[in-house]
Length: 630
Image (tube, rainbow, N blue to C red; front, side, top):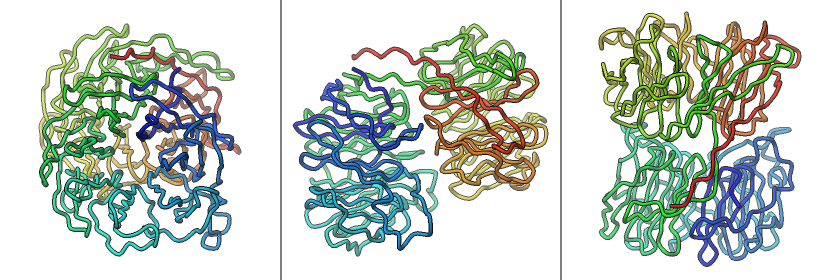
């Protein structure tokens, strides 16, 4: 047996095994060697094509309770994994405090607790639902003590005090039973994904996503505080979200990791914890971790891989059976606009558009496995492509997939851009923007932005180089030197995901929409964001239409000149990542790819009674073979 859908959360259950939830709304049970023992049936509730991802999971006695992204709360039998009772999101709402016809808000939140036979969890409207675990009857719906932000983590392990972390970086200390939390401490400005009790020293540990003060979006990691809310330690070791935290069985060690892609091992034998080693080599960003009954560490990564490790030896001892696939980026070959290069979980696929305008099709003509982990981004160059891989490499390959050179980057790499003349490539890394000679892979320059990690780069038609950071700093450098020609500061927290330019404008994706900026960088000329949920990952511009894709499994089309929404698609099978525009005969099509390895083909029309986007067909890239256990 194998897992067919990407795992989102893991939870160890003593005497039972490892419980796992997935993007389709199911739960699974694995043993300590990560062999799949049992899977729940597909939920009986109406399931959208993008599934009902479950991030909120609790176990109490013989029951499992979950909440999906859309607010549906389900009770399962731990013994059989059969669903027992389901509460629709609207059934748990206090409608007196909602606007007319208000719908549940899709949200990824993890906060849930079971205390003295009652479930405490946000419903789909961010109200607090208190549910009797035995009967699964809703006892009361009250305004959440966290206000208009969701619960993200709950710890009930410390006698006498419950601790709750929310999505605004606050720790609430008090009592779930009384719903009184008199002590509130801000330890971050983002999600507190994990809040755990250190029983050796009677302290609470909280993860950070963003940081506080001058360190926001620059340095953060862990905050340690006393039960009365006094911060006693801060460990700023991370440059990206911290997602995972677990103690060894005796609490003498702790494991913490996140989107930097590593696990830090901390010695907790003394009151002040310290990092003793770092585990790396994971296939993607770390999204969760758990410690088994025999004290092994299980690590979940964003691509759905689940591995059992021996932290003392830094070795992987088992892998769960799962075959991921994703289209991380899509770029058209300038020499052959019907050919697309797709960055995938194991390399690069070559996709060919064919057929006619009336009946277009996509076919995979080649799939080159690099052996360097997943390809994050890709850019075409004459006679091939340049790609950024997860293991910190930049590679250039010919059209046949053969590697011509490989260049190691000084830090985690994010994106790559190619200069207008094709002679240089600019790579965004946590150590700045590294410029390479595309013929040899030799480093020819480094652009620094106040020591900040650079998350995206591009070239303007003039050859000027533009870089963007997690803090929202955009900076342009001269074509041949490090002279800063302009700078633009976005709002703090408006981090940059991707950059590209056309003849007249620079385009920026990230938080708070897709932005259009003139080449001189004086201002944001237009922002495309209406109805988009969560971060805008990528986009494309064609004639008078701007398209954007978001983490909310959406594609939106806008009028380029007015910003008016002209089309919206919300039924994708997974988060979209890659976007490209192609032409078949005399018609224009949008190709969108994402998690699950799908490639959707849309007819793109500026104005249509049915919207600018009309899906024509869906194609899937093949998944690789299951990796052997080591």
